Amino acid sequence: MKTRANGKVILLGEHAVVYGFPALAVGITRGASAWFDEGASARNDGSGGPWLVLEGFTEAVAQTDPSEVGRAFSSILCESGAALDPGAVLHVSTELPPGGGLGCSAALGVAIARALEPRANDARVMHLAMEWEKIFHGNPSGVDAAVAAHGGCVLFRKGQALKPIHQATPLRLVVGHSGVSSSTKHMVDKVAMRWESDRANVNKLFERMGALTEAAASAVERGELKTLGDSMTEAGELLSAIGLSTPALDQMCNEARKLRALGVKLTGAGGGGCAVALVDNIDVENAIVQSWTQLGFASFATEVAQTKRWTETPESIRAVG
Ligand code: PMV
Image 1 (tube, helix red, strand yellow):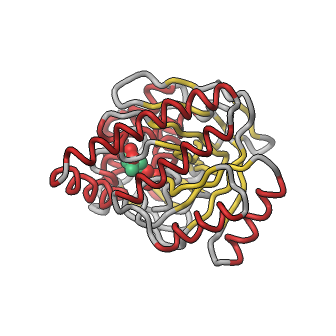
Image 2 (cartoon, protein in one colour):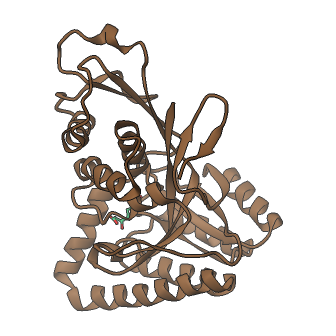
């Protein structure tokens, strides 16, 4: 049995969310899977297991390994207290680019948490996934893990209950990768330095972003896609003003605006990673995917993943909660 978790796209509020402001985010169907290797006892050589294999990235990493992956695995295992055989091998895979701003590490953390504790509720899963996330991100707000576990469209505020946002109209998004991966920890530190040196202005900017995020959440509930798009674009300009955009992200945003996206911005930590465009018809969606791809930015169209919890069986994918 495979467990699944969503990737995520932050529509508005990244970085401000670290300072207690809300973020509006959606789960996407691209995400991560985890599964135990049934024939794993062959690995039981007493040298530091259980083991984790990050498909396409690592060979089997022992929980005693000093690498980030090893430490993150050890951290989530310790918090879980799941009784694993030292020969156990957990495989994880993801369709999300690491350092792409699409919640890759949180999706992996949630998939692993579900594999370790198949009966855990979302709150418990998020809690466990945060132990994994902390090793990579230092002090994550928790928005990525929350959306990875919950899916749908949610308004997230640090330390508060997640608010699911009903979508009056399905949201169509185009996501494109600038080709450069970025470190969330590094970008969060960069914003912290800016905040330390220019608190009044950065706070003002985050306050505006918070107001835009609340307005955007209401717009989603009312199906007012133009308001949502305008809010996203302005939020993106605020992120650029803090120095989080790059020439490639700017190029993607300009191109999507020309092609009549309702709104477009960088998404996630910035400094690379992805841009997201909101569109209201298939022609604009295709045009943006085609144009970004021709410019050399790997792109895909996606809708919001509606299902809360996933388990993948060989026969089918079915929702379990
Ligand atoms: O780049 P990502 O997908 O890890 O985005 C993280 C969002 C931030 O607000 C920048 C950090 C956080 O912990 O919320």
